[in-house]
Length: 539
Image (cartoon, rainbow, N blue to C red):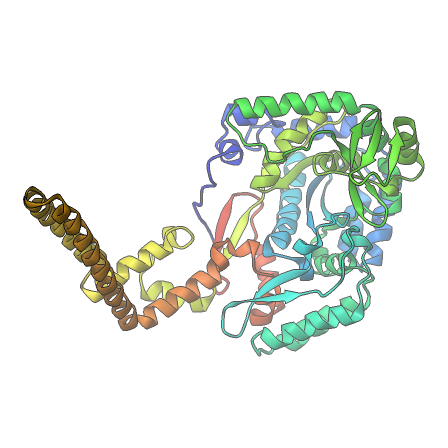
């Protein structure tokens, strides 16, 4: 059962966009709640799209078939040949075993939104997941967390050496993959579902050459029956399809720089923090050799930071045309490559992504592209049955589950003990301070040094009071150890490491505990829109 949860984002650009504040909406391509915005955007995008749809379909079919796609995914891909077809895009960095939960939630949201828009717009709408395999931050992609047998988060790591190359070009050694499976077997609860889960992971491991391949195969098998289409930007055919945009990014460097600088000044003037802080001289392109390196412009040439590669403008433009696989867009240019390759009507983004898109959108008119509508990705927190029991036992309101749970726990502790040490000892310290103020005044008249000695004496008493308060609080906790343990389980299950569950835990947590039917049921119920939900699997 899904229940909408009011979990407002922190103040900032994303908050203002959700609220429809004009100063935020004006930086983007309309608002997702605006009447008729998707109909108008789909017409505009389809009319402006100039890529070879046949080539796009061919490369998508080849890639998705190699990853073991379903007939449903093939059918969705073939729809893109229709000149009226548009796409709903989402994407994420490659993560171990599909990474944190919000990665698979993005995929579900894209499927649901595409189906909803297809029905409303009466035109083909295809859900596409951008597998960010060219990302080189392997420290973010080499691990994941699952809830272990003790219901605490357990880290699972992929032990591979990284030299700075894109994750999609790293070799996935069989021994490293087996280490992941052995760690899972060690920490996951011993349920009837774990042998099947491990066999499924191992089967796909054997068929994967890179960490990105393993990620893609798992994600495609989870969402393939729903028709999700995957795209890897490292695909040679895709790189060549995007080559004209990379060339334009070289030729129009000055204009693009000026547009970004102006946009950043406008965002700052409105009180917004820049999501992407650019280095002086940094361009929108990166070079890929053994590793992925930013390109800087100075003295009429493009340089890598270490000076190992130097290109004149005409040389870099020629490289973009002939060998585009040796270049890569940075975080601000990547959305434009995405919307150059696909006729994107909508893109599902989280808070940080929406904020950096507000910067990137300034580049669209310079490169002649139509920006998509930003739709906030739905978030979700799984409330397991074991947690529901604790929530009911302590009568915890849903409103505090993800926000003020610790404060609610502390209040229950004080009520259960019939005493609030903090209040008692704070009152004692106030009384002592008042009494010692009078004593100090009297003793200071006898001798100023006695006044100073009075202050030291008071501080000694404060330290003794603090010691006594600590002992009282410890005794209170001891008498309520069961309650504290239950609240610790709630926090570790819903907000591990004091972070949103979907940003920490991996889907294997729930596949191991509840089996594939848990995923199938969630996929059926997952929303097409909204911001955050509580999910009660067995209600």
